[in-house]
Image (cartoon, rainbow, N blue to C red):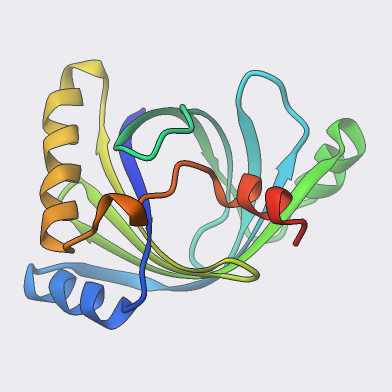
Length: 170
């Protein structure tokens, strides 16, 4: 799978929520998620544990503020599993990210309104496609939502939550 994604700091999650709902967003739930990042070369490997989403995700993407292409492999998991213990023993834990996440969809675009422990409030936009032939459309979708949310360039965040937590020593 491939997506084009963007992350931005926000001050007013209610405003983003209202815009999403006014545009027919499908609210998929509020999830308290724990993302465990493992030591890994050539990308990022994380185990997501939550009430709504549980998955093992390997992804590669550049650390740039503008909408960026992310290539990923995802395996959905049952909530109760022993994968964290196995991966921790084999690879070692890099960092854990704790967050509260609201999940919305509009067609192929997934939205997260996040409150990340130690970092603050964010919105993430992920335009999801099948392959590289979708890239132009996915970039356009991200740009349209950035405009609708009135997100300024200085709000854009290039780093993953894991890198942000490591950088701040949280």
